[in-house]
Image 1 (spheres, protein in one colour):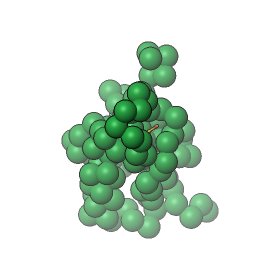
Image 2 (spheres, helix red, strand yellow):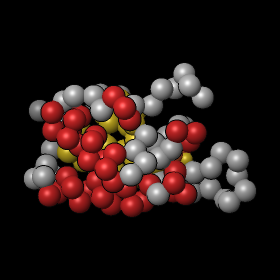
Image 3 (cartoon, helix red, strand yellow):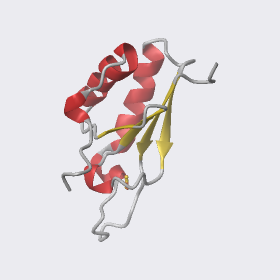
Image 4 (cartoon, helix red, strand yellow):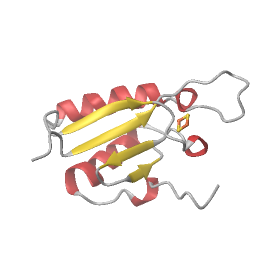
Length: 107
Ligand code: FES
């Protein structure tokens, strides 16, 4: 049995202001990480779901970037409500939160 059922890695990489790649921390990722951790705790999922800060996930253009393992599903949550949608659909009900999935072919 795996130690955790799922891992949510959310990028909070910080780059200098003039870096054209931007960074997820400038797009509010720190507060999204804190919110996701708080909600996992409130939902009683702390022992099976792990939320981790991550360095650059190489999806900067789509940030804030999140990847859920072991599913290898990539999301771009912009708001706390987006985190709620991912938690309710993907984490609690094993359904894709389709509207928030990163389409890597677009950029
Ligand atoms: S800075 Fe977040 S994915 Fe690159």
